[in-house]
Length: 219
Image 1 (cartoon, rainbow, N blue to C red):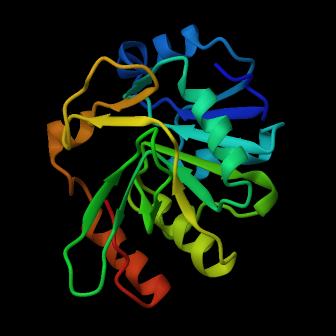
Image 2: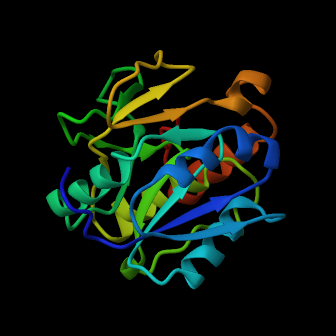
């Protein structure tokens, strides 16, 4: 395994301690690397993430959902992806693309390629604090579409690309987990219990499209 070099802050919004204990906590305990951990509670996601950006001591911040788990190869893969794409705008583990006159396509991360996507799923997003971007906590003060909005800021304000991390992504709603090294797993806890467009999904999708003057493809 390569030496982990870039220092990373892990940012987490713990909105359900039972899910936190079941999934991400064990992954954090087993990580062999030094990292800064900032956990927020009782805040809306975009606001919590902005507070984490303000408090983070490191240049790179990895925001994670609590219903995920990963092995101790994962942060090394994050580091290698940063080295491979030092000018990245944002990175994640699953995203979507839509070619002209074609349907939306989900692109999952793998350790054999660093593919580009248009927007990322919110379960995992890596940002560079030096870009001086913030999550829009005015238009997106709930759980929907603030990550897609950040990806739009990366693409149109910074003219940078959105990448996938070199890891093996698994998700209950897209594919089944295989017990291999270097993985990131998302249980999709909310989607399984409430559906993909739960809550005020449509309201915030309309706000996203209006802000950017186009239909933004989302996960």
